[in-house]
Length: 246
Length: 246
DNA sequence: GCGACTTTGTGCCTGCGTTCACAAATCGAT
DNA sequence: ATCGATTTGTGAACGCAGGCACAAAGTCGC
Image (cartoon, rainbow over all chains, first blue to last red):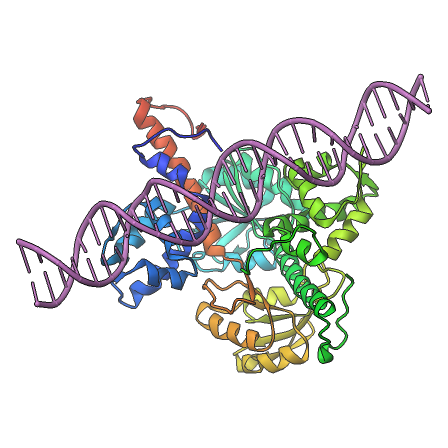
């Protein structure tokens, strides 16, 4: 995080910088909800209603939207079309972002076929794998290249987002090649902590971690119940073998 | 979120409650790194080294571990085996958690075949879909049931974690059925904001949102560069693509 | 045109998570 | 047995994000 900003007049760059990551994630959600509303022909919506649909507090929603700018009308609400446009602008969705997928296994295959990629605006322009048998084979219309060619191909096709869907051991090497190919944003599905230069942005999607977090919650619940029983003495008859190790 | 706790003496339940969600996610990462270390025959490790491998600050790592308990030896470090055991205990990984996967499309298929599910301990015990052609067909060894049977089957097989991999329109209905089947933890891959009772825990994995966040970062970079040029008037002629922000 | 009503935008407070920095604990060498 | 080196565990400070609540702003009805 850079130093404190003393500005008062927020130019675009400062404002963009200032948007908290959490808010950006929510903006993407708002955008989806708004798109659905637009399709239903809704022209205007109030923060209260939108916030419910997005599953957040209405004050938070308004604050998030204020990062984007002031596009609401007091006493009325927000114009859906305008909001969509502005959020897309902030998120950089008015421009296309070339995507490269590395690792054409189960997941990579699914990604490559995901028809233009979620939400559109993310054309897949390159696929990579180590498997010699896959070389040149078109998957979802794009031929697979060898991972050794990552830097050259990414550079040539101006890839801005790299998706890593390889087995864990290959991930770091692949990541390094993407970086040397000029890719500064990476989406990592491999269960590995990637080491990258400061100016590279990595987002990870980690199934195992998600499952374990849920496991924690399951365990926590079981603990509470178990202890509650112990504390208030309420014997729950039909629990069927739920014994707590502490 | 329940009310504030006035505790001061931390019994197990409170401690479990007290672990911040972010810390839980990191514990899962530490666990993975530790497992790798154990396989390499490492017996003891210091917080500093472990923190680097996990990509976090060493103070944060120690604090995270302190939520689990005091299992380090000052002047030496942590015993890998002990740490693994304790983290597994806290995350509830000493017990199996039955998983149900709903939506046997591209992703659902991949998940069902994921051999015991990431990291093990998460046996898939039920599969569901709407497609009549899939009924009874075994995928990864488990026959597919109809989504109408979700409540009954989940109840019977004591499913504790439900995974939603359906198209967006079906997600909420599926979710409702899982909940009525007693499932309290849900992993949602559908790009939809699920509405659930307070006592149900939902984690979402949203590809479109991840891509859009990355898009934001790409755009932010582009903006900075563009504005930097505009502001200081420095025309960058032959940069050949590599421009450093900052 | 004016007043009542609605809804935005935001200043301020609160609380949580991160980071710092140091005392306590342990080990190994002398 | 004592001292120095090392590393943990945590109290305290800090900073950021979330939530409340209200003033500003605009609409609609009369």
